[in-house]
Length: 108
Image (cartoon, rainbow, N blue to C red; front, side):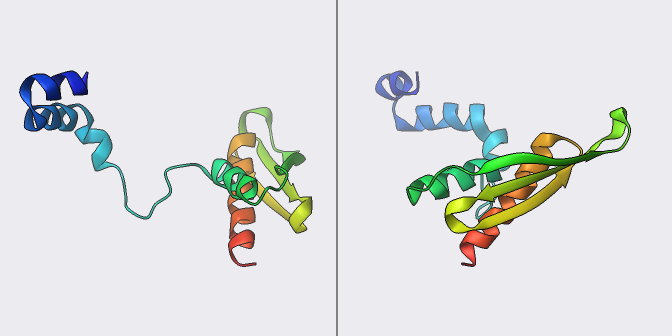
């Protein structure tokens, strides 16, 4: 669509349409802040080194069913790294564990 606008009306018209459609999304981008989540960044870092993917396992669950707290372990055997993360959902706990593993990889 943008190419058709560019061919028909030129660069300025295509640019104006893109800015109008994506201005709100573009305004939320913070330079230097990662766009991908921690689990994705960890997976890409390991794949870039040709290492196996991390293993996530549930370490514990605490609290009532409506307010549980999950603790997740992230293990990277090839680098001898094991981290823990906790959160109100398994996903949040996994993200925290992955972020901590990334920090260990960057400081190694």
